[in-house]
Amino acid sequence: MPTEPEERLPAAVQIRVEPRDFELGAEYEALRKRSASSGAIVTFTGLVRDFNAQGALNGIILEHYPAMTVKSLHAIAEKARVKWDLEAVTIVHRVGALENHDQIVLVGV
Image 1 (cartoon, rainbow, N blue to C red):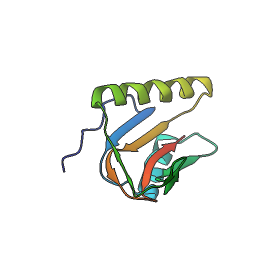
Image 2: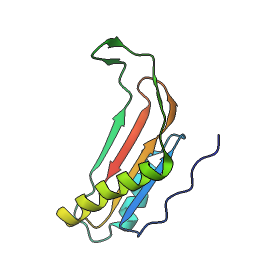
Image 3: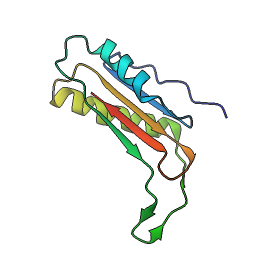
Image 4: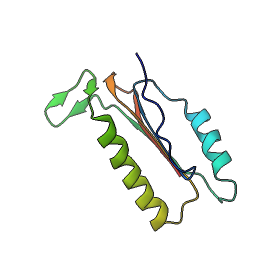
């Protein structure tokens, strides 16, 4: 399945929306290189839950409009970067068919 190219943004903000899974360690190291003067790196990894308010789930399918998705995620990242004077922000958001407990999103600052 083809992936969408990484949005070309300033080094401070990196956004990717793609169907393939991400490797947390590799994403951390890339963020660390872009955050040379930061005193800490914090990451959040969201997972597909196996339930919702209506009961059990057997995975999800995430559809999206690529241009709108990247634009919205970039706006959120840039707002956080400015508000908290962040040196770098990474967001990786998966799309497509995902199984329960799959990684769905990574946010790193």
